[in-house]
Image (tube, rainbow, N blue to C red):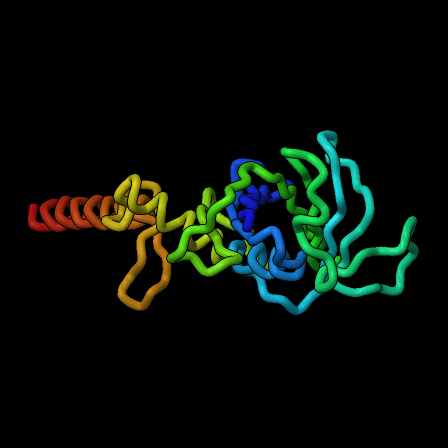
Length: 201
């Protein structure tokens, strides 16, 4: 039994990718499910694969189901189509589109074929993750991870000048402003002291 290893690139940033593997006898439904798992997406939306070539042109569709839209040719269905039956090239490529409203696009490329499967792996399986995956329903998770990464790299948790620090109640304050306020209080204190000294004379 052949094991097919695919690299699944996020279409908008090819530095973000996931390596997945399926048996050649498994269906495109299995490939669809492992891609969603790899990118931590839910499975609530429409999806389709396109058979492709080296120029990433869209060919025949292998769809999750037949949707109410025009087709150039009758689509194949994921559940009834094995991945191995659509491998025509050593570097076979597919385009995977998920959620036709948000139109998430992924470029799927065959990178390895092995005759033996690894006994400890349960196929389909995610083998490797590179880069932070896009957030399916917004950027909150991505921003949070990025902020944590920046804080750790530059040690900003201690309230570095010019960067926000968290006060006891969780609100953000600028360290720069805090220092400015302390400076103003100090100047006011000096002025009052000078005024008192002038009064005594």
